[in-house]
Image 1 (cartoon, one colour):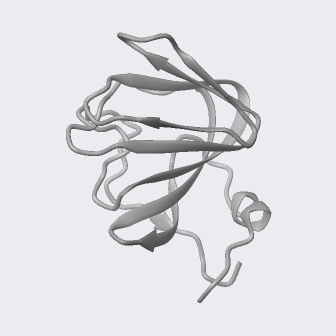
Image 2: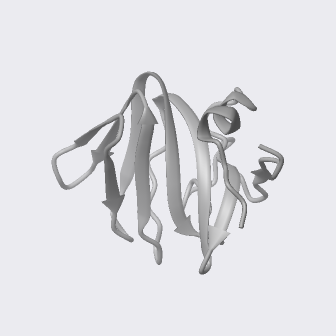
Length: 124
């Protein structure tokens, strides 16, 4: 069993909107990302997506429902098929849980699409 120090893991990268893989369990990926500004509107056909804010504040904008604001220590699950766009007025840090094959931009292809995730070193 290995442990991950979140502070050290987040300190190991600066790029925003580029999730880093920190673990896997039962076909699920555990990802970390730094975010600021607006992401792309998208949805995931067959995957729910959990957003856990570890630092800062993140808004999850939704097309057909009221937006959700997440503070540090709060999480929300975006159900599969729900179009959403994460945003952050200032830099925030998030942890994501979703199936390992889930693409960060879901049903759209943009310059932010990541098909191969960088893994944060196990030595953290």
